Length: 221
Ligand code: DC
Image 1: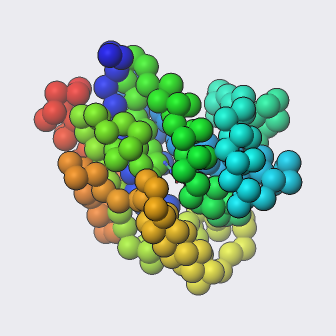
Image 2: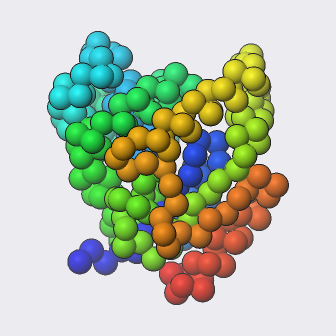
């Protein structure tokens, strides 16, 4: 048994789970797993190597052989810097497509579990609490309305100087939600023992405080 506790934070895109996971990990001094980044990497490498997202066996083989490093804010894959490439809206879309295949999820599973090491791990994604770390002592499912999530993303992209359509983002979010929630394997849903937080009208600080007080109540801090 590994001597490292796990806190899982699952939820749809734009719910704020990535920011929350970062804040919690920093505060506790624990490791961080951004599992969405792994699926984004697989999608990006499929594009680079011209592997069709639907070519399940090839995608799974590619996923299992990648040499990935997350260091000092940079994502390096097989010697290539993919830090910015995996953060685009297209990369999220591609990730959601490759993530539908059970074989690809299996290939990514071992890698995800290898992030668990002392003193602890905060893991964010879609199936962290249901499939990858079902034994986690604290499971959060962070949700928000699609409209609020589209607004947040819109502001982020605007701040980066990118011109985007709010309506287009909302459509993309709804489409991605439907694919992530509707897939046969490891669909996006709260674990039976998850604490569900609707962040639609909450600040990230408010959500952070609620999660930390829950972590204290469960003896994790
Ligand atoms: O969290 P994100 O937006 O970076 O995730 C991108 C896509 O990857 C998401 O739409 C579905 C997939 N994903 C998944 O299937 N399981 C995870 N644990 C994390 C992400």
